[in-house]
Length: 517
Image 1 (spheres, helix red, strand yellow):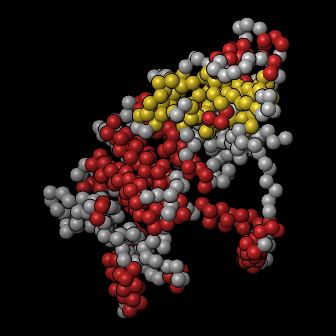
Image 2 (cartoon, helix red, strand yellow):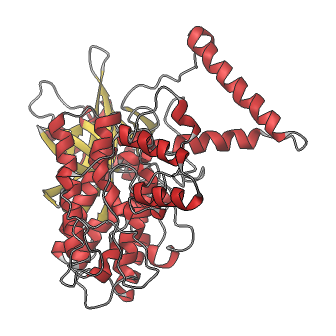
Image 3 (cartoon, one colour):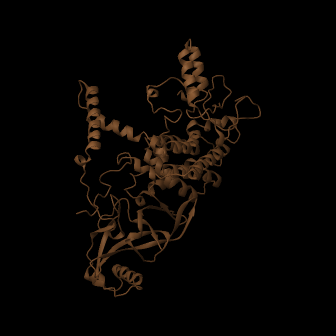
């Protein structure tokens, strides 16, 4: 596909590009739905498109174009065909039986969403707009935003990703994909709420975020659910054009191809089952792994071919004889407390933290038969939630040198409702039948409500108790210094496709102790 070189640069549809200048050499590079303007000089004759009725490319037309290219008599004729159709040549993979046009070359969600769209929106807010615009973020506001990101790191669990840097200062210093993901999923919405960002602009951005989160989540989809994802992106694009272009033909340049291609996300889910199928991350990781193994300077390509052949042979053997490749899996009991903290005799006196916890446990168990014996309890500092997920507590994190980033905040499902809290400590007691009850003592977040589909509330000083099986996940939080609102940061699904290195995780920050010993 010809991309920006063609008048029809979108590889999935026949939406014609538009230009934003009357200069003689200006190119048709942009994709608004409506490029009409009173003078009719910028894009005369260009149709007005409806996002729900886009003219998608057809395979028959693709092959007709390939035939026309092969029969072109000269370079000029060939260039004309490329410009008019957006098809430049026939790649080798077309010979495969799996080739279908236009679905064969899918969108790459990581590059499209995070490295193209998110970065462009940030640049519009901070660099490509003037102070009189409702969406403009001044240098002072951007600096404040960036410092808020840095200040928020202590309550972002290290298991999520590496530290996120100040985007105001580090935007042009190889800002990583996981950092853009963090801004998009966690920080832009709560920060701009607290900073009083324009509500129309923020609501439009929320449509973008909600569409991304729905699309990047692995789940089976009904036709109605796919339609909802389409509507989120369609509403975002309609609002984007109204807010950032506003009928000014010179601002059509803000309707970049990457922004327009978001409308194809729902169609890709319909085609492939998930937008994540198109990710280049897996392919790039495999290339990197092979590259690191090449040691021959005399014949590097021969060694690369041997490495790839060997890798594929191992895969085939694993399919034919799976018993030969059984991995030794460490069996970790789900939700198992570990990092035991002995309850000292002096702690069993009135007024101590332990006695406050014990009183809360007594109140929680009051409706149960039998007595709550102080001596039957054991206290723990951490909880393994299964796999490599670990929930800490105030008991473990504030003992000795506290960690740079906390993992003691959690989400739970208690009495039929979603709850969030700060784990203070974990307690277990043995029952007569030799089973064990496990509890978490915590400070709850109260007044829970959602704004722009994001949970928020306020801390309560009360000490509550919940059963450990009710805990669902580790979460991060951000506490607004102005309003004292506590914003909940859930781990977003896009991180699951990235390696530890791609997530910016460093070995000295991730707690690998999961209580397996």
